[in-house]
Length: 111
Image (cartoon, rainbow, N blue to C red):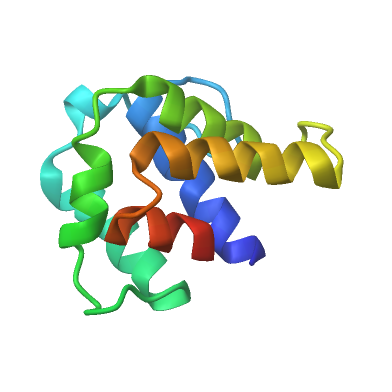
């Protein structure tokens, strides 16, 4: 779980273009798709998708709703103080925004 959260936190920092975080990374605009794919391949090793392909995660990456990534960043950030109810609310909100009845929504619930 911790490795999964660390990987997601790194990815959301890149996706949001944040300069602060546990790992300082370049803005996503400077990162080729191959580097984003590395995040996804690392995530699939930790928490596999149904078909073990990154296609599902690229659907997440293509989402224009930046609130999804902001919520993911808050959920995965160890410095953000949140109780169990807040964590549950964040997960529900993320799932709702990506589509709770979709394969991506089911995957996000599993994370």
